[in-house]
Amino acid sequence: MLSELVTNKLKKVLNPDRFRFVIVLYNSTQDIPKIKEFIKKSYPKTKNKTLKLENSKYSELSKDLYIDNSFIYIDDFEEVFSEDELYLAFNQRRDKLASHSINLVVFYPKKLQTKLYQNALKYIPDLWEFRTAVIEIEGSESELQSIDIKEDRGFFEYSGLDYEEKLKEIHRLEEKLKNVKSDELKYVIYNNLGFLYKELGKYEKALLFRERTLDISKRVKGKNHLDTATSYNNLALFYHHLGEYEKALPLLEKALNISKKVKGENHLSTASSYNNLAELYRKLGEYEKALPLYEKALKIKEEVKGANHPDTAIIYNNLASLYLHLGEYEKALLLYEKALKIREKVLGKKHLDTAISYNNLAELYRYLEEYEKALPFYAKSLKIKEKVLGVNHPSTAISYNNLAELYASLGEYKKALPLYEKSLKIREEVLGEDHPDTAASYNNLAFFYFNIGKYQDSYDYMKKALEIWQKVLPASHPHLISAEKALKAIQQKLK
Image 1 (cartoon, rainbow, N blue to C red):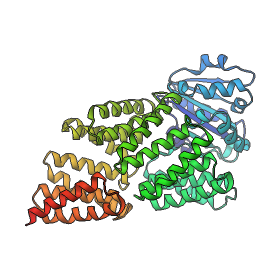
Image 2 (image 1 turned 90 degrees about the horizontal axis):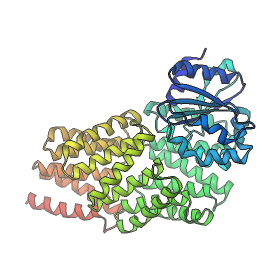
Image 3 (image 1 turned 30 degrees about the vertical axis):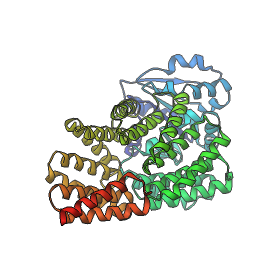
Image 4 (image 1 turned 90 degrees about the vertical axis):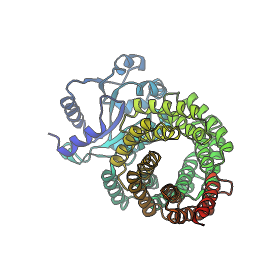
């Protein structure tokens, strides 16, 4: 009999209506039937099929592999690394697997877990990237209640945790870190802690762990290793979030140069570097530099991962945001809708990336003054963010701010003001008073007070926004130009 803790965790990971790839690390083969039996009882209407890899060919397995709404078990998953035909087929057909609503539950001996990570990254890197969770059964089968998700779980699953669950996971990882001596495991834990702290909006802590990850990578792997490029990328993204764009730029350029040198122009890591560099240029308002980089990233993603992959959807979304800033609304709408369709189908309607798509579509409709279309998308996005990230996360603050903007556009000022203030409070507390996003809140409140005739309040907020942006943005940035013009207009009203 499994404990309630075990059943709750398994139910969180599994979903027969979506693709899931779950790796279970077991101590004894007696653990395997217990897990299977629980799944069968929990989902009685879902098909179950066990496949054997030993002495099998992928062509023989495939007739039972692509069955929608089914649980596919592989008890001897270690065999996938023993045959070229098997691991090549599984890896190359990853997108086909992910296009079906199957839960691929594979079992692997816990004593060989280090070998699993090494072999997975070497032989099935594309399929491994799609893992939903790695679940470890601690101790013997009598201790199944201590089942938990391992350090090397996919970011896909971390994004599905709510705010309190992320806090618990951080506590668990930090406790485990106290007894870890291996640089390899420290690298994994630092990396995951950096991600989790970012998800919670605690950027200073996230930055600390990203810096530690980079230090290990340079020392152990070398300055020109692809893992070091990834660490440069991750650290740059945190400087980006902190508004320290000048620190982010050289790190992104280093990552791109390493990736091109080691993997070539058409590798996925190179595409990621192009995208990240484009995002920074977009943030800086240097749109002419951003566009060709997005286009390069998209071409690689479409060729390697396909047009319907969630990673490709990221580029569609980002390129759409660029077109939005350029005022090319038809192009933006087409790409936003394309990204949303992929995310709803592959990730589900409650995933954080889907929430981002809802928010961005709402923003576009607000720009087009189609407010009735915008409101339900804003509401969907906010509901997901509050559940997954918590009410005090900077991303949730974006939704509060955007919803306030919509109400202000409708003239519903009593609804708009508390949302503006809520967004500002989060940004001041989490990001700090000198962050560009905090400046954006000051800017938006300045326009709000201007529109209701409170010009002194408007002036005070606009002045704050301008002072921050002057510190962190180039002189040609649209935010700066707009704020300078707005401040002059407000001063005229005060005369």
